[in-house]
Amino acid sequence: MTMQRTIIALTLAGGIAALGAPAFAQEHDAPPPRVKWSFAGPFGKFDEAQLQRGFKVYREVCANCHSLDMVAFRNLGDPGALGYSTAQVAVVAALLAYEHSLVRPSDLRRLNAAFFTVNGYISLLFLLFWGAAVWVESW
Image 1 (cartoon, rainbow, N blue to C red):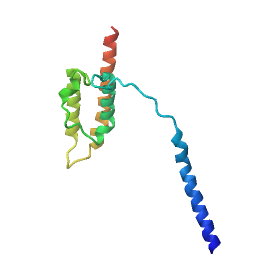
Image 2: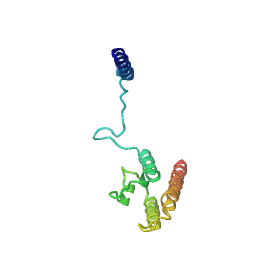
Image 3: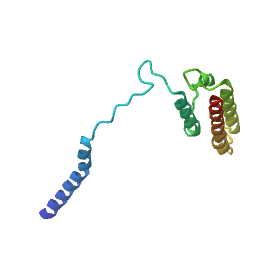
Image 4: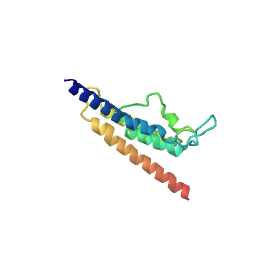
């Protein structure tokens, strides 16, 4: 009986030591490189294209569960923010109004159409807006 307890204790100790080994191996990694961000510090500024991509990802992915209730549509066109034109902001607002008109709390049959199909249309419009901006800049 004593021999069995000793074998079990040694097996458990070896297992615990084996599980801790990867943690010891990772302690000696080099620190991550320092990166200079364009938006760092009090005088940093955001890249408009990155902000627009982030908003596009929000509309396609995050907006299905989260909302931007505290952000006014006029803020989408502010200079230094996303920089959308008034027409682009109006299109986004109209599509969101349409999206919300499709679903009622008592009737969720058109939920997929509201939150997936309309978001696809919004993505296509952003692609068209981007293509038009690139085309105009190339002239």
